[in-house]
Length: 226
View (tube, rainbow, N blue to C red):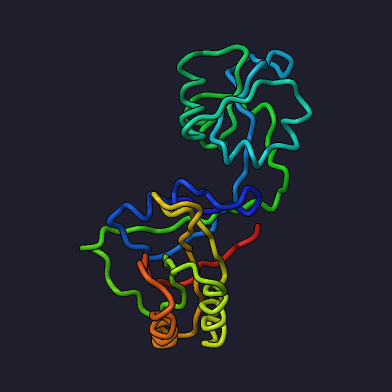
C-alpha cells in the first residue's frame, strides 16, 4: 500500500485505512515513479482538453500541467484512468499513468516523464493479515500510532524520550482524532538498532501516551536510485 511520495508527501487516506484494517506491516519498498501522459492512438497534444489521474500523480506533475489550459479530473487510480481512457476511446482526454498502463491498454505515451522532479520515489508498505504475519528477524524499523492527553508540552516529552533512547524518528504524521475538537493522534516511524531498544523506548513513553498501536516491526527498505 502506498503511504508517501517524495514529491507530494503523505497519502493521508491510507493512514486511515491502516488504522481500520486488521493488517500488519511486515516490510517496506521504495519504488522509483515515472509519470507519463497517455492518449488513445492518433490523439495529438493540441487535441487534449482534460486530463484524468489520481490526485497524488497530479500533484507530482503540477509544473507540467500548469503550463496548459487542460481541465484536471481526479480519479481513484492511475491505471484505472488509463483503462477508462481506452474504454471510452476519448479523443480529447488524456491520462497520467505508467508506461506499463500504456502497454496494457494500448495507449500512446505522448509525453514521457512529466513528473516535476525526476528523482521521484513512492514508499509502499508491505502488509499481511494479522493471523499470517510472522516476526521479522533483524527488524530495525517500526510504524506506530499513539495519542497523548494533550497537556502542555506532552508531545515534546514523548519525542525527547524517543531521542534519548537512541531511536531515530524518521517520520511523524499528525491526524485528527475522529469526534474530537482539534485533537490529534500521531503516526510515527521509528528506526532502531534492535528490538530490545525499541521495546525499552515504548515502555518509557507508556505513561505519557494512550491508544498506542504498533502496526508492524520490520526491516527498513532501501532506496535504489537508477
